Amino acid sequence: MTDVAGRTARNAVRTGRPTLAVVGATGAVGSVMLQILSQHADIWGEIRLIASPRSAGRKLAVRGEEVEVVALTEEAFDGVDVAMFDVPDEVSARWAPIAVAKGAVVVDNSGAFRMDPDVPLVVPEVNPHAVRVRRRGIIANPNCTTLSMIVALGALHAEFGLRELVVSSYQAVSGAGRSGVDTLRRQLSLVAGTELGTHPGDVRRAVGDDTGPFPEPVALNVVPWAGSLREDGWSSEEMKVRDESRKILGLPTLPVAVTCVRVPVVTTHSLTVHARFEGEVTVDKAREILATAPGVVLFDDPAAGEFPTPADAVGTDPTWVGRVRRALDDPTALELFVCGDNLRKGAALNTAQIAELVASELSAP
Ligand SMILES: NC(=O)c1ccc[n+]([C@@H]2O[C@H](COP(=O)([O-])OP(=O)(O)OC[C@H]3O[C@@H](n4cnc5c(N)ncnc54)[C@H](OP(=O)(O)O)[C@@H]3O)[C@@H](O)[C@H]2O)c1
View 1: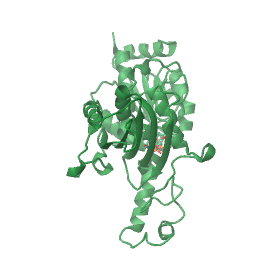
View 2: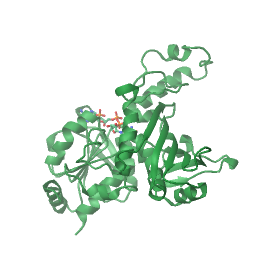
View 3: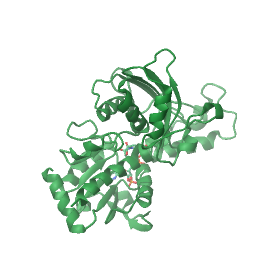
């Protein structure tokens, strides 16, 4: 293990059970993280809650106790073994290396380190082994859109060998943090009970110019945009799904086409997936794989009106898969509809699972 991890192990010995820091404890992801830490096996010693100076002194509940939030400073990492970062990219970029220098292993939820070749990008159901090869002392958590489908895809890839991916997302507003949720709720209150949505621009006039983190009104609408502009008209979110899927699956040249769309759903991303494999596939075999894959629930009986929707998947841990079909014009391809809670498996749950892998390593004799 590197000298970084070596120092971490000594911290764990000093405190008995490892000390965990949750940086960004007050945010959309951080709030779900506190629920998950309260529900999972209690493996941590101290859990320290960290946020911006704006939140210092606030008290938040975790493991049934009120814990005071402290401001992000170097001293906040004293004695910390594992630090989860649920903060904007620029905050992680600056502070994660500081936490590592203070002896912590960092599990980062932002986009700051995901494509760094010295930082593993880990989904415990797909590539758990990668967690140990952390040359910078940092482990990255994938983007919520990638995470909402990759557990199901990883299982199919292990059996069939993935050759191409075409994906469209239907992304919830909480993917843009607390301000995304606040924006949708405000806009819904302005359009509820009206006849709006029948004339060009009527929704836009009703909700006003402040569309929060979205470029267009999101209530009564779908917005084919998430993230910032990249080359040739692609969005940053679309590039993340492509780059991160390739890295997690270990397929650096996998052809991936993605269109990301924001929809008026509070939490839980959905995706349509067209996945092409090495050879012919059957729906029966695909269903067998999905029905037994850890972290996946197959919910697929259209005759009975059964398929996943965000309204049912929200607040749950698994990746829900339905509408499994073989492509009509290609016997090597499958069509799927996938739903995953973007704040649980899409963010906090996956981070917690990674941190638990690190904790078990630190606690090993
Ligand atoms: N939302 C999702 O579905 C999702 C999924 C996967 C990954 N992520 C990533 O997870 C991270 C957090 O996202 P979020 O949706 O939870 O955002 P959010 O709701 O806006 O929360 C941001 C958190 O970061 C803290 N913060 C902001 N600036 C800070 C600073 N200068 N110093 C210390 N703390 C600071 C905030 O503290 P205060 O409350 O004190 O301002 C808050 O706790 C982002 O990198 C995001 O891309 C989000």
